[in-house]
Image (tube, rainbow, N blue to C red; front, side, top):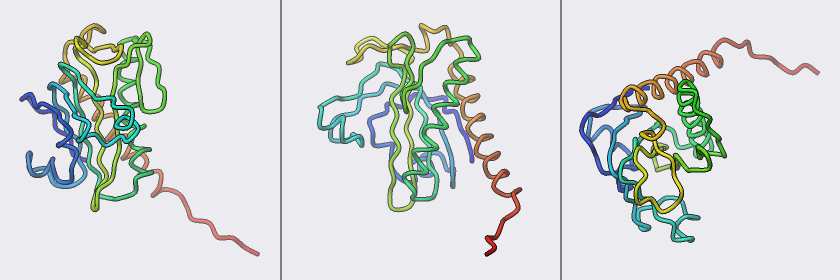
Length: 187
């Protein structure tokens, strides 16, 4: 798992959630996660969450910390587990700041304000995850919380810590899989 925190701002509009976006734009081949800051404005026709589309719930934030993850397998259920693991990594990093965070599925809340947006999807050759964390909240369509108001100023360091935690968790899962002895059923 390769990681990269981008210095330049990128507006997230949903088109980034496609196979090889990371490779085409940043020359990182293979399983990877990149983090970047930027405005988020996803039109309904670019949204992956069909429930949000049916309910006409667009996504907007003036400034978010975005994570894009690509794994080169096509198992959507596994991608959703990974999405939840990344959300837990975010939650645990926030708790390092002694921030009380509530996780409901793949969403994070601070004092009933929604901090995150998140989706996992699959393509013909990979699975993709997007997680966005509000930094600023002005103009959002629902009650939100943001990293700025929580006192998190070094967004790049925060992003790096989250990605490192996610990467280490995946490595530990792989090691756990490799260290067990197989069993056979007798009878």
